[in-house]
Image (cartoon, rainbow, N blue to C red; front, side, top):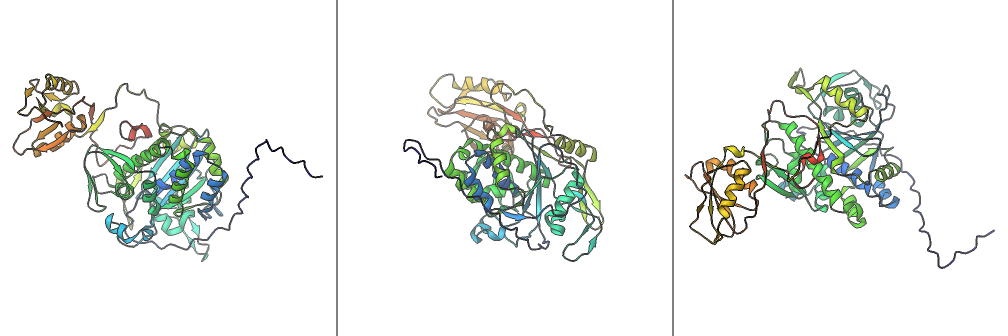
Length: 502
């Protein structure tokens, strides 16, 4: 019996999109190991997929994203796996994909050479069971690892367990051996596998309008071409790629690079969650298109999982994320036939991964400081001697600046003077180039000021006030770090972005 027609006054229900028929997974061709695994941070783009799914835009949009993800049978025939914990563990693996970038971009951003089809970036992302926290743990590529015994399915040959650097597991046995190796080291059950290359990384950053990064010290790497002065920078795609790839800017090498990757990932999350892209279907579509084409995932990570995760993470924010690097016990652990490796601190690493398995946060609640957040600087303000002079016609400006700098901790003379000019529009910091680090630290306290080198001026810095002077920004000295044992404690996303972002 046919149903009666609907009333014209009642709005019609939008038809549901047809159910997508899963296509059979494509078998990935074996990837031979190549030399020079120099690339990093392809996992940033993949995590952005998870964050973008939190928009709850709808089944059709997320289904189109799912359809563009290549599939890999990452868990087939795996045995003797760790027991499942609480929450969801995703292994993010970054691979090389420079062959998909234009020749012009290769030259501009130092991306020469042949693609290595290797992996040098690994992160475990733990999503809490209540979907209110994401914990990101970086696994150094040079970590000492032991791959388990395995049988090559193609040849039937049995390979005994043996020692390798962690990044070699992928080249030797692909996603399955990588997962098995990570599970053996962490005793965490990996629920999903995501693999990306950096070809869409620049496009994603550009679609988001760039990502804001700050640095208290200059960052210069001749290998990647990175050249950032102290301060805050809005990085577009190519420069962002240089930032996350750089590993020759300090003695911390790969561990320093991982900290920069974590800072960038936090800034990327902040950009995506605060710019409205998650609630704008057009921008959401543009970003997902930028991401498509570089992602491979296990067959179980599909539309339903993305939607379920997205619905649960609609209120995800920067404060919901936390970052850590697996604790290192020995920085230069020699292994015959392999070379220098990083040996994990077994006891500390076990506690870290036990927290993930038990779905416990890696960071502790700390009272947030009241008032403005201090900007990190290179030199302790107490070591910076400052003479203030008034470059405007307004009386009392130099005296007010002298007092404010003194309150901020700078070693002012407490004897402000009058400058030869009385119509300065911009505040100028005159300094001897031998004290350039002190000058940069003082400039951080005076946003918008101009640095002017004066050879032979001596240790005392001179500040000439301009009409633009308003107030002094609070600064703090960056804690000195031992390159042989960098700080590996867990931090929240709000602790690693530029002041004012959190």
